[in-house]
Length: 60
Image 1 (cartoon, rainbow, N blue to C red):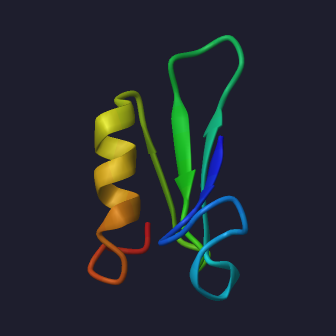
Image 2 (image 1 turned 180 degrees about the vertical axis):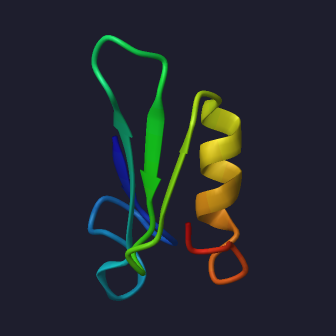
């Protein structure tokens, strides 16, 4: 699942993309910020909170 931040179907401000990837066969999700930082967790709420915290999120 991907979403453009800050706008409609076109992708938002300057093409900033936030991505959540699911690892098949597990409950693991990986959030990938437009800045390249990644965070892995099993809770989708945690992933989205981390992604939307840019630029305050730690790059892990």
